[in-house]
Length: 432
Image (spheres, rainbow, N blue to C red):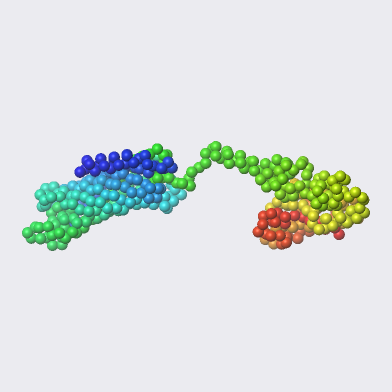
């Protein structure tokens, strides 16, 4: 029986080895040896060692995934007495079982502290046979056949991708056990006289403790015991491709200070004044972009570079209205008091207006979006106003004609919109 059962387990494992999925291997062979301990029943006066060296088992295991699987197990061994304290006995056993397996190590994320340790739980059923050697009272009768319920815990330590060392403790409960483990009494509360099988169908309990090796089969690098789906790292080629993609997104092909992935007009002419989305500005909506419009705030045909055909005496009023109505703004990045490059030209327009109108005074008004605390945003908006104030002074405007103030949050925009919040990070101007 030992020979055929062993052959069945090995052949089954090898023949199905090719079914392992490509991410991880599913099959393994297990070889273990160690101790056993029959807890009871034992005939009164008979004792067994706490650690009786005399157990070995062989198993084949298949994992459906990294969490669950099943295994077949063949075990052999013998029970014997405590030398010098018990009458002699020797009982040989053999059993076979089928068990479900759960990988507790993966379920409990053991990889967070070690990728070489895991814990398996197993539970199943099978059947076995005990045979009693002389001088057992019932050594002459047919062997005792029983069914088996078994459960246990197996710890694994990975030595290589193909081998792991194991330690297992299993508890076994025999059903329909006719004799005591030593074979000198019936497994019954009262011994029949004359001795006849009482057919009480009683149970027997014993445990095993073993150490052994697991051999992993398959072509993949890892077995399911150690496979961690989230632990798949990108290759150097994949990382290089991702980095190059980011670099492409951050390119500013037209040099307008707006990255290509945000730029809705990625081919803006050099020197063009653009908005935060990279689109060329046309403040007076006359069809001539600001960088080509000699009168950017007064509508006019392109034939006269965006200026009216006739001189308009109220030009100053148009410019004043454009500035006061918020068409001229300097924008800032998130949590920054440094003007965005694409909008610095707005300060140049204001400086040009002030130079042509020396009697005009102006206030620089700073704003922030609604993210952050009120006090912080007041200070940030004032820093923004001061930054633009400094630009105007550097452009030659007398500081006595200028004032600046931070007004804090601009609550007129939709704070849930990223684009709207960008519009709020600005300085505006008011002519006094």
